[in-house]
Image (tube, rainbow, N blue to C red; front, side, top):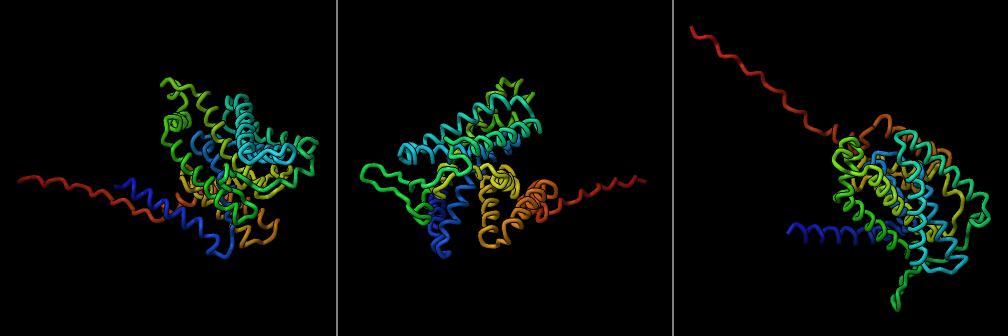
Length: 326
């Protein structure tokens, strides 16, 4: 009975979430951006929380999905299903190539190399005419996932929001299933004790590569939908903002919590959309949130709240020694 009841509650929650932007006064654009950026953050979350590595290259996979979508749709007239396949393929190929080079490295060296890859990708995007150079690619057509007589098109944010929600729900389900899978268990073992994993017969390099490629699919899919939502793709996708947003969303609430990246993204985008203090101040707030989460709240907001409201353990009472008999 628990299974059907849980499925019913999940369906009701999804339906309420679908209608929430309309109830809140037409905030479909903000909700769509939150969903898209949360999906991108989940790609990074798998690497940080499950694999134990800090990748600074997930903006490359995000941008790869967006650029593949923009180029195919504007220059070849490809449909949305074809651009989705191309976005996922581009992200996976880049992750496989980068992973083969970097995943033998550990800790800060891995992070530096992945960041260097982001810098190189940004330089290519700025200077390669095929990618539009510094002007980027504009006039991206609207999302159209129609199948036969079934019309599934989105010409504005209100129409795009259901597709962003579906992508988010699919991502949540996929991440949940990954963490319950054999690959997820092996990733955690590789993270916590690589030597024990090797002694147990686990191919550490293969597990790292598979998880890295899997993570790229989420970020690339987010880039695919972001290209349609914004109707423009440019080198700004490689800016530090997107990287810091993903990192902050992963660590702000707590690692390896299914809803943590979504809540973190909602807090960040919500502040920028509804409590904005200007571009420079918003950037300081975002950077300050990341520093605070790493330096002051290592367990994130979730860990801090758990410590604050945890019941103190009862003190053990010392047993009295029996009095000597006269």
